[in-house]
Length: 252
Image (tube, rainbow, N blue to C red; front, side, top):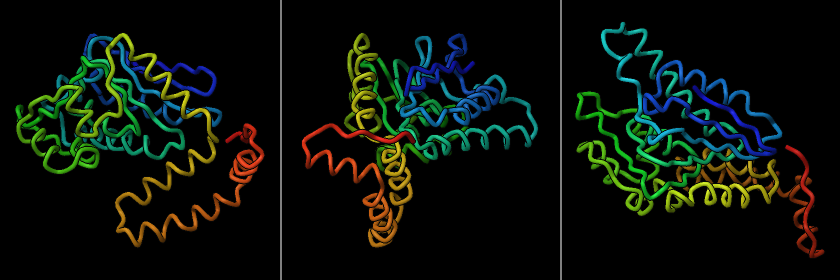
């Protein structure tokens, strides 16, 4: 249900459950977690995409009726682990959104580091409509688009279109659906120009500092940047800039 494709430094994880609108069942999320754990060190970028008209309709409601408390604990624990794992990967993770992304599907888009959406994509956190408030989806959603906008989505369940998602900061780029592949390829290519070791260092520092106070954030990233400056790739990059040549980066 999660197809893994390795193409040089790029790994693509494809949600392959179109008949269920790529719903994130417990089995799917566990498979997705295994795929994330197996991302090779040689990989420099991860793309998350989906097959069919929907990116993901969120949790699989068909498995959420009449279960015991332990099942619900496992379900939402797996979901949280999956979203956190996206941030823990040293590789940038790009969501490629071709269609509807609702509830935990919207959460998945918000949790990815970057997102490119087709004009046909829509986003929603409609759990309130069925009596199941999107409490876990709101964690990355609020951090992506801010309190007032997130609360409007959470309290009304109303969808927002791709243009609104772009304006609110949920996605980075919106393109016609026929240009989606090319737009993601372009973003991947722009990332692949640089040292994967430095990209990983920077991503980790970004998430480590983002929720801290400004003085605490500076205290955290100052030694990170000092260590980075002494690193071989930084020294190579600086030398290449001064010598007006292309740098040669080390493997991760």
